[in-house]
Image (tube, rainbow, N blue to C red; front, side):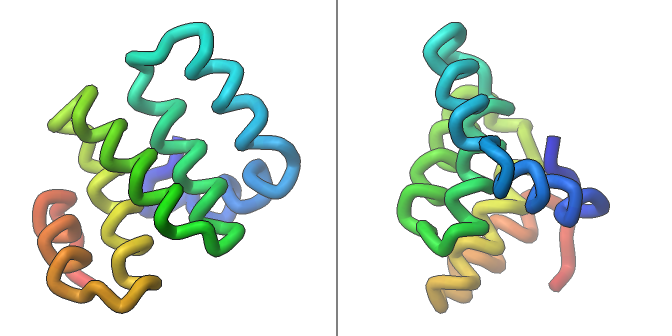
Length: 97
């Protein structure tokens, strides 16, 4: 749902109940990587970076090829000042900051 080009749209969704939707989706299918990524993005937008990173990491564990989760986790790491981890995730995602 969140790719490098649509972060603004996701921010609007995050502020209108995205975490609730994602939680419900996770309860239905706990192996749905996209729901973890989207909930992580919602946490990210509220400054809850540790929770965001945990959800992005779960999404990556489910789908190691899910580059959007790496991209988003890279931004969460960057927000925490963890530049090395951020850059590693950006590299996997094919993004150059």
